[in-house]
Image 1 (cartoon, one colour):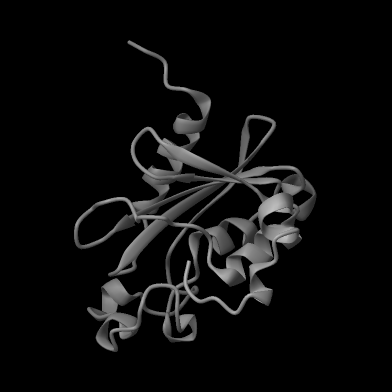
Image 2: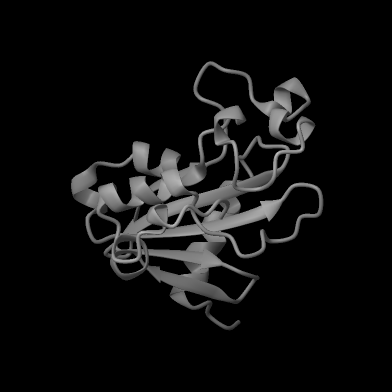
Length: 163
């Protein structure tokens, strides 16, 4: 048996975490790793005590045909990255890596060209996370250097929508 490389190993774990997601559009799983130790995990779901879209049987954003990456205030869910960050001490996240995997609920396909939304980018930056690794398919991924790509290249000044 061939041993899986470390990055895909952690992405596989994040993909397992996304199976807990309750979104009817897209589910994401995140794990935060530092020094080869998992610090925290997160998946997409409504805040504690509120019903999930999967419980309600509908997604408001889907019902209103809201495009991907827009109008998150209509979404019931907390994003996987946010949930992972919420559940980890900042001191342990400084210099860590966040692994992110997303799948379309309808097709099971990986979410194409995925990245963190604008709000999650800000949380990743403030958490002190150094890199975000995003799965594009079962074996391919992108490594995002947070400082170079999200701090120095501040896309919030460009007025673009989506992710």
